[in-house]
Amino acid sequence: MDTADLAPRTVTVNGRSYRFPRQPTIAVCIDGSEPGYIEAAIAAGLAPTFQRLMRDGANLQALSVIPSFTNPNNISIITGAPPSVHGIAGNYFFDPASGQEVMMNDARFLRAPTIMETFAAAGAKVAVVTAKDKLRALLGHGLDMRSGRAIAFSSERADAATFAENGIDHVLDFVGQPLPDVYSAALSEFVFAAGVKLLARHRPDLMYLSTTDYVQHKAGPGSPEANAFYAMIDRYLGELDAAGAVLAITADHGMNDKHRSDGSPDVIYLQDWFDARLGKNRARVILPITDPYVKHHGALGSFATVYLPPGAAAADILAALSLMEGIALAIPREAACREFALPPDRIGDLVVISTRQKVLGTSLARHDLSGLAGPLRSHGGLTEQTVPMIVNRKVAVPPGRTLRNFDVFDVALNLVS
Ligand SMILES: [Zn+2]
Image (tube, rainbow, N blue to C red):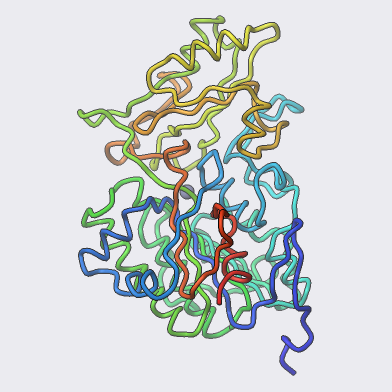
């Protein structure tokens, strides 16, 4: 019997109903896919599939979650909800309960079920492939691998995948590619190659493919390296499309140059600024971009949150920050959580966002920029919020609705014709 005969007609996750897929439905997150990359690859004649999908399907744009970082946006996509619901407001945060600064890539920080686990529990076959392992535990959270209906693994640790942990083993043989280096375009290519194989062999009802922005951090739209990367993606998308899947492609955030004309990073060192104003280490500046992959960005992005010492004059501090060149926005926690749908208990007293070309640091002495591969390109702010939403079907967006990137499953399951 076809499992679709037994399946419910809709599945509700975090207050939103999704139609049960009638054909394999794939959401793709191209990490750091600033608008312009795809268009430049098309203009160079390297992306015929993108060109066809954008012409015959839907070529839309969407807004990412703020902070425009990888984890909050991937988790918003997999839950269909903003950080106020799922709790993941950065890659990194300060936990006031323990007094520790910690990585937020542990599933214990996740406060909402994922679309994947809910569909799997309702009888769907699901698969998740991510480039970096830092996301795999969160994106695959709640999946019952023993059900035989769920698969979740990363390119980074594909060699270590086990049936008990990932719902699949011998992944390198299955995909037919060697284990890629974590700092490589091949890490993302592995995701797509795995997606094509999974679609052919497992025919999941619902699949999520999420790449890494190694290339976008290094190379701007239209550069030879970026064009080659998008040409690679284009070939795999062509295969997924030809296999009959519904494909919806978005990004977790955009990407911009964040350096001066001499190539040095254009940084406002906020911890130094607060130390000069309030005394050493009295305020605590948290950069939620912080992760172990420092070669990408040196922990420099356009979003920071700040914990103030008791009695600090927050209004005066915000007024001074707002006047500073390179600061786009400096607001208190309540306003930031309202504006950007963030969880108040994981945000400091202040939120600070820099302008397009600037990034926010802690202290000059605390950033090791020696590992940066080239002039800094990064993200995190309002200027990296616009991302593509490209679908290989026509899409009916209700009038007046602003699409978010975390609507990608809503678009693929509910809004396609
Ligand atoms: Zn990202």
